Length: 209
Picture 1 (cartoon, rainbow, N blue to C red):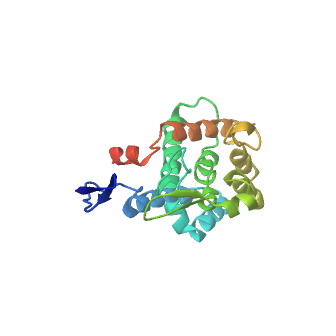
Picture 2 (picture 1 turned 135 degrees about the vertical axis):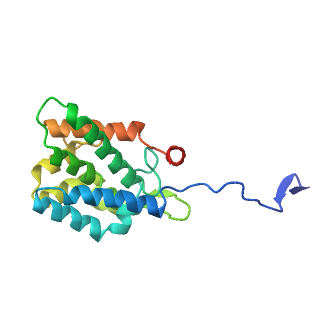
């Protein structure tokens, strides 16, 4: 209802018609989190397993709630988890039909680790779902790619460092280098598929549940 006053509208009453979703529910995020932990715990490389679990558990709340972008894709609460799970699902679907020898554990590690820096690159308001850039992080690290590349190198995982550094394919898109291995080439394609045809927005997420 409204009354006219000096050619302006004065709101007298507001009624909630439908509450918009801001992303994945806490229960949905926990299910995805558990799936990722299950995959990590299946890895044969104990050092890799320990390093991944360490960074995830040290930042568990951020890992569960972070978006995967500000506007481009998966820009909602739990968007990073959704993006990681999509990359994993695409990889598992392709493994049986790839005719060349691919290191599956390396690819799955890429799925989980390539965007971990986004936990710090973005902030998200858990009430409104509004995503913002963390300027302090950008000033210190430039991007999530630089952070991830550094994390992998500090833990002595050069093949993972290369996958992270090259997952945007070319420098114009934010890659530090172009893919030089079969695993890096494949992972870029997995990441690209999720960022183009995955559950990119809250609207697509809701319609899929």
